[in-house]
Amino acid sequence: MRIAHIHVWDKTNKGDRGIVLAVQEQLRAVFPQAKISDFPVEVLKNFDQSVVKKINQTDLIIFGGGGIFYRYFLPFSQAAIEALTPPLVIYGVGYIREVGAPPLQKEDRESIQQLVSRAVLVGVRENYTKRFLVRNGSPAAKIKVIGDPALILQAAVPGVTGSRLKSGLKIGFNLNYSGWLGFGRWRQDILSAYRETAEFFQKKHHAQIYYLQHHPGELAIYPDLKIKNLKIIDLPPAAQKGFYGQLDLVIGMMLHVGVMAAGALTPEINVAYDIRNRNFARFIGCPELVVELSDLRRGQLLQRARQVLQEKEYYKKKFTQAQTRVAGRIAGFLEEIKTLT
Image (cartoon, rainbow, N blue to C red; front, side, top):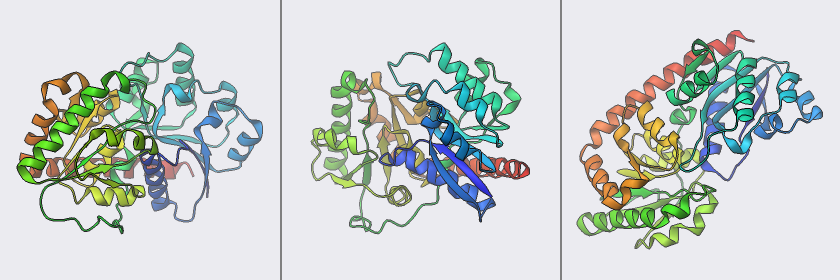
């Protein structure tokens, strides 16, 4: 069995890397002897006949998961899509639109629809992406909401300094400084809200605060938090998820900080710089776990953190239910993929 996996190629972004690992982990559960070849998503933007020829030598094409319906990767090439010959499966993908970003251009949306039309199976990670595709012409019956593959990525035990945590309250923070152009507008509100939250829990509960690095770009911003005794955690995705399982609360901006925390059954709050943050929270049945950028000045991050910590067991139960639901949907989707081979 030969599988071409077309995905985001950024190995420095823990979320993007975690999605790739999760998808391939799940594929190998049903195709244990498969040879999986990696191709960057750009192969569908910049048509290269020699690359397409390599893809066409495989038995199956997996496109995704992750935020591949994103202006940076669009429009896809009509020629590249039409040249693909093996069965094409869209696996756990999502639509990205950051706060302040313009809507996709007509040619971007049309290229997405062409890809969806070419696919024999389509699985998206939440309901908003399905609505986006249906609004732009895809048949609703074709689009299955299977969840985010990274939610059920197998966690590893973190084998580094910091894996043996002291007793007491442990909170992880994360910022998005990996290319979102709107950060500058909200910079002071974000940093102040994080600092206020850290100082409260450090003073009242002697909390240990960890910075959860998901992208090297964050090295340029986390020192501006000015949080005392801040410890940096930068592990491979599975180990990072394992570390999250030892925390009491995770507050992040990068989507997959929240996804991995929920997958580790750790209460999490997302600061919504993108529609996908809101939609993941809705998908797991916890829309209250999002704080809007416009609410940061009013102390909403600290208030929400205090509330969530008081209901830790409730959220662990909700996250367990979400994991079970996603695992079941992905298992069913994989069974459909097996019928293609």
